[in-house]
Length: 432
Ligand SMILES: *Cc1c(COP(=O)(O)O)cnc(C)c1O
Image (cartoon, rainbow, N blue to C red):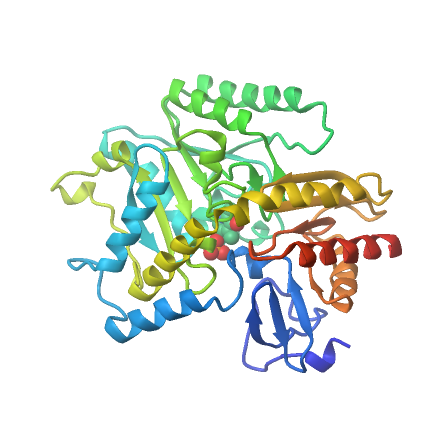
């Protein structure tokens, strides 16, 4: 079945894909709204927003037009010593949307780089103040990207194992995961905060920053925590004088039902990393936004205090134009991401007692659940491939993380389409 639509190519090395044994990739010819179309005409309902980037639906004409208009005017200019309107406008909008003093936008072009920059900013912040900090605190099961700094602050896992000697050492603490009907969350939060306090008290000036995926850990298995935990984390990092970095590469731009997870939690981190949804899935662009006080530590004519980082495509005007169009559309359609949580909850209520399901959870536009299997839980769990195949047969694009099944649709998904997705999932679960 899949072979017929296959797009296997002799000259491409595909990411995150074993060279042997993996199904050949499906060739996609077009996209429209929440749907993608394969060569041969089959339609798939995109329930993962194409690797979590497509917040507004495929091939949105408004974003396409913005890119077209910008391309005819200025496609690129070096961003050192030069600036341009689309980048300035985007920075103003981001600073306006983000809480408090998160006002300085540093551009790059993917989430991993946005995280690298956040790490460098936090590290050099202390160096510029004349302090030597030695390490970072991060969270079990965290995922922050595939470059070396980002891997270092991510959980040690199958993804990073082969490079472990090359990663810098960090301290990792438990992420207090919760789900619907969980009655032990207070104990889990207390344990995580206890461990954090212990680390910070034992070595008062050791950590440059704490980095976390706020509200939802993505690739680690759609693990969710409460806003209350993030509020306590903010208090703790203030008390112990360390920076707090929010990796909102996945949670940003409406994913959690608010513009940003930090907004939903009602707190202000010192640095925030943004990418994925920023351009509506059209072009690679990322931003690391820091507070005025972090920026001030770099405000010097001394070259040793300069942040020596930059990519050739930094603040690419086409990317900025796509982002400006995306933010405008999000502004006009806030209800689309604000309403999805309630819709998920209504559908999940019907699945609540399904014998194959455990730990059902929702945050904003993201719904997730663990599938009970005899196999070991985790990324390599075999149920993933089975669900992927059955979903494909039903016209649904689902890509479980091991035994974690999740839905993260573009916000344009209609009530009927979401109902279709949940009907399909119920049928798949019944067959397992
Ligand atoms: C995807 C992701 C990244 C990495 O972003 P890329 O654009 O894939 O490099 C970093 N952090 C989080 C939380 C992510 O989900």
